[in-house]
Length: 258
View 1 (cartoon, rainbow, N blue to C red):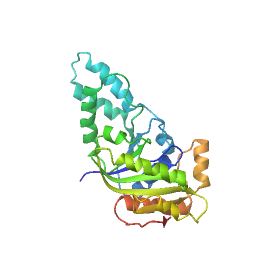
View 2: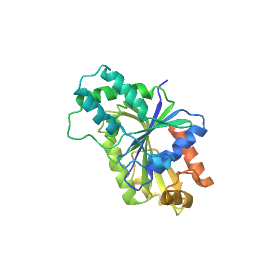
View 3: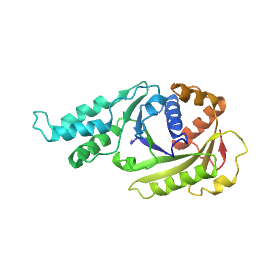
């Protein structure tokens, strides 16, 4: 059975990395493991949110393979790719982390990218779920050769500007050569429980809107560089509902609160 692929999109500061990290932990609690966590944002803060040190990235691998492709070797290039890719995985309890790194540079990576697509596709078959923390431009999904995204989670701050930004990312996602099963909108960092209902009307692209409350402890974790592990009961409830919706175990309607 193919892995359930969940991709997070949102502008910088919306909280998409926080939501991705919390969702990964909830999927593991629900028994949906192993999870492949993919940090596809060059800013690369998903490792910190999960309590890990950032290591080498796919970008580093691409450069190494580009150099290797120019030099003769007794080891076939596809075997080298498999060995080096396995070394990039940060293996943890219940999940593995793979960081994409910076976008492609000025070199020609056609041959290397062909090998990379093959091995990333094979790698995904080893997991129950794949959670991708994307940068605002979601072309990284194409780089990962993800043909089908079960759930695209669009994270926005609870404001007209935040929702408009999420709407542009939703439009961009429709221009990519991928299939998206469902789109969810997460209104994040809500301080006032009375979120204006007109925000939902500004975002007709989804049927599900999940409201996530502000959590002082999560903000403190980011300030101190600590893993995002401690949540309030209200935040836990919202993330559990998000996890169930992503897995298709619960159909939430608009204005769903944690």
